[in-house]
Amino acid sequence: MDVKTENSSNGFTPEINLEKLHKMAAEVILLGKFILRLLDAALVFVTNVLARFLGSKLVRRHFHLMLSALVLFGPVLSFWVSKYSIFANSNHYLYRKFLKSTWGWTCIFTASFMLLLSLSARHPPSLLLRHLSRIGVAGLLWWGCRGLLTLLEDAAGNCYEPVIPAQDIQGTASSLQPLLLLHEDQTKASCLRDNMVWRGYEVSQDVLIICLCCLLLVEEMPVFGLYLAQAKPLPRSHDAPLRFIFLLCVVLLALWMFLLLCLLAHFPKFPSQHLGGALGYLGWRGLYQGWYRLTPSWGCPGLPGEGLITTTYKDTQPQ
Image (cartoon, rainbow, N blue to C red; front, side, top):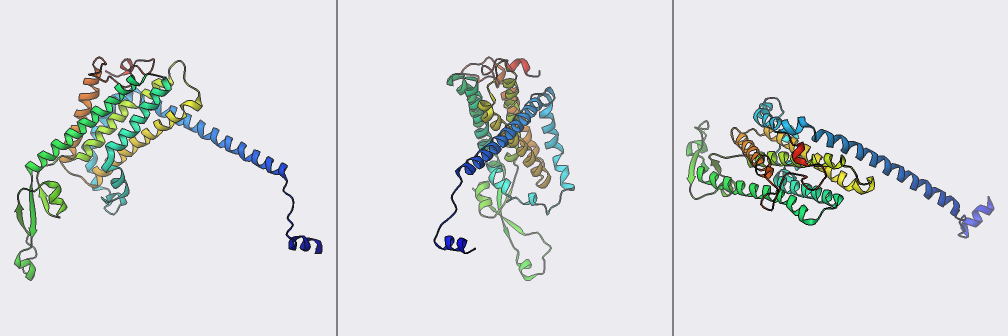
């Protein structure tokens, strides 16, 4: 006992066993490799199932019908949802961070998926640019629709300032509606910014862009299933980034569907939301079911996957 205290007082410490440290490091490395293999196997299984699901004829043929039914009957859920729900708050984190930048998130994830798919298939950059132009065309369509709808809303509406009558101030006529003072030459944005009342016709731009992005993702993502079915797939270590970005795109699609359901259930606006959904559907119909089905050229980007994989995407498209 005295020897131990004397050694500790003199500052001596037990010698480090290097062999034991090497053994512990090897065990940690083996555990890390096992976890990585487990995560890789889970990623492969989940992405294979999702690719098979999104590539099925049921989804590709009837997803737009399901989305249309959701937009049409979604506001009925407002009779059952609670007004005290966290999603009934328009300042919720999901609305502020995702709803206002729906197109940005969709553009980044979809373009990343196309880039990794092109690199995995080892195709020239010119083919990648032609497929990326589909995202650019959809972005131009959204930009034009947003500008046009803003002009129409400003032209078809009026800005009013609520004025409290003198009787309301005295408390003799509190049941009367407040007077509205018309303010001309006011846009909708400036009117709402000044805490005034805007009355007029409008189209829900949020529902429009969410529907367009959902339909765009459902058109672009099934290419991954064709990539997996080609004759010479890449090793797992090489296609892991592609699988991961594909999984993120599917998660993004689920998020847009959830936000659309929240908007319809907690903030129903008839018929502006239905008009927005109809315009999103028409935009998808004109691009993916119309123009993109023409012969691929620099004037037409073509359908998703054309030229990137051995299987032609047009042959797998439902008529």
